[in-house]
Image 1: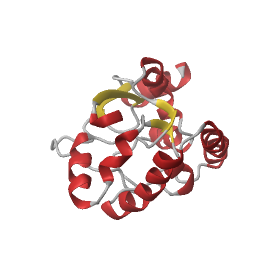
Image 2 (image 1 turned 30 degrees about the vertical axis):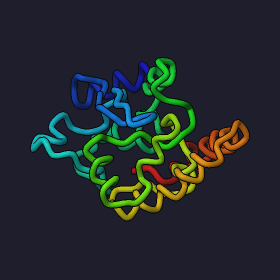
Image 3 (image 1 turned 180 degrees about the vertical axis):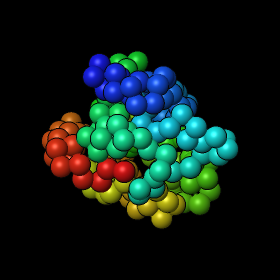
Image 4 (image 1 turned 135 degrees about the vertical axis):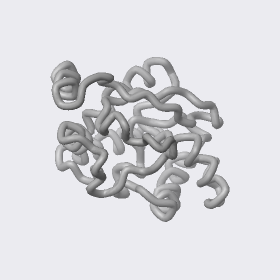
Length: 171
């Protein structure tokens, strides 16, 4: 993590971390922390947007830390604080939650469990950058909400290792 912080600083300066409000258990918001993988002016127009394939806002170091999921490691702090779990639906930004809740039936049900660093949707579906992708990922999130258990969590954690090692689904 120290090496990652140094690489971020050398390439694009400070801040090293990216903090952002996300929606968690029962719709409660919390602040998520990640290594910064995009230019500092990534959303200079103030409008939230999903990262897409070949997103020009992502730095060179950012491409590597996203592919290897190193950018997610600071979220362990959120796990220790109790805002997140190791496994659960990935937390989304309030802007997108509001939009997706209006567009996709049952979207809010994914907030029935704590969000996670990794999840069933992350190991089963590629990176999503659209409402259609969110709709597909919701099927996996709802399966997890209904069936979550220690055994399913172990399966997700095991498969996450494979995703990290292969870079599958990274954006």
